[in-house]
Length: 130
Picture (cartoon, rainbow, N blue to C red):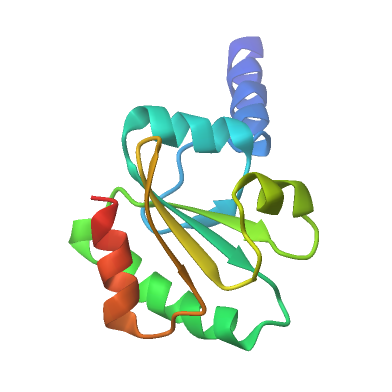
């Protein structure tokens, strides 16, 4: 009984720290440990910088959801950065605007777009991370 409780406690700590792998196409808040783990795993990564008030961001979200359900992007890890509250990350990633999408292949940035809402262009950005 104690062992099961210990396992459940450990699992909840891992989830709370953002270290558990996200499901394919699932967007989760950016955290350094989770981002670094995804980079080390070599998985394709998309960093999505958004704001709740941004109409372009609202247009991008369903496009990203649809693309991430495509089998080609089954390993895609999507991390969200809040434009309004995570200014330190914006500086570190050299982001100046919300609706910025940054693709990574492992540790290397392979593409970036700002304000893009054309599904085929966003798809092309994601393909660079494969």
